[in-house]
Length: 347
Image (cartoon, rainbow, N blue to C red; front, side, top):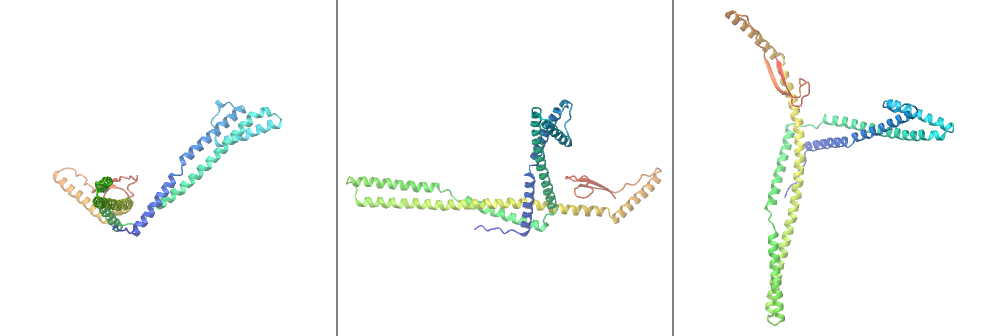
């Protein structure tokens, strides 16, 4: 009843491009570089603070120290190790106990700082590679023109029509609860009537014909209830199928709408670039420059003649000025203003 839409090559190319761009952006966002940088900073600060403690142990007051640089804290580690080794060589294990513990803490902190730095550098390298790929991808979007855009517009219109058909079919489906409940009430009443006749027959107040009539009425009522339930089940199944179909069509329409918007941005941006260039090139071309120069000279000559007649000094003729609002992509938009800028040309 509802046909399957065939995807065009233009749509397939753009969907693949959009999917790749989305995947690259997700991959960049999931690198968690901020978290890795924070962990490295914490590990680095810990190592530097322990290095300051070590320096204080070797005779430099901590309150007179500055936070050591990377090179300094590495040299402090080497100096502390030499200090511990010297004490141990002299058999002064008692004096070496505290410096040795500090050395172990410093070496552990140095290892943590190095590990987090390697992790950070690895992530930054991955980010750089992904951003280069993303930049290349965005600079090489699939080909698109107004004709391709019109194709997508038609496909969107077809999906909108498909959604309307499905919704109309859903709205036309009636609620079956009333019919089922009525059939169940009839079956329950027929069962009660049969029970009453059976009781009367047991007392000798009813005959076989009354029993057969009641049993037949019960069978018919049960059949109607069963049929109503079966019909309701069929309609419920149809409703679920239509709702599932509507969901899929709406998803397709949403994806196609996003694709259309991306393509429209690309198509109209290229048109704007070309149109802005052609317009400005035209206004700056030699032919129109000659015309405006002739007009400027004629204005000056006319002003001199009028001024001579009126006995006053002549004013300089006005130069032709063209103001072009909202120039976005021409190189005259030196600041790359996304809203465009007004360009004034004196020609």
